Length: 66
Image (cartoon, rainbow, N blue to C red; front, side):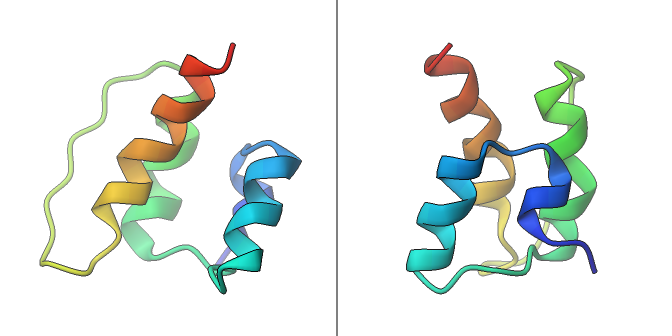
């Protein structure tokens, strides 16, 4: 499983995630974050607690900070 820093997220986001104990992405995060960062459309579904909020929210935060 890749680490968040290998998914293309900025260092400051990766550090904040680590401060909160979030160091290894869930499968849906590893699958969607790189594509979302590249501006591709992504679609995913998963059970509650599968990591969807960060999977889709982190790339949105990146776009908002540009």
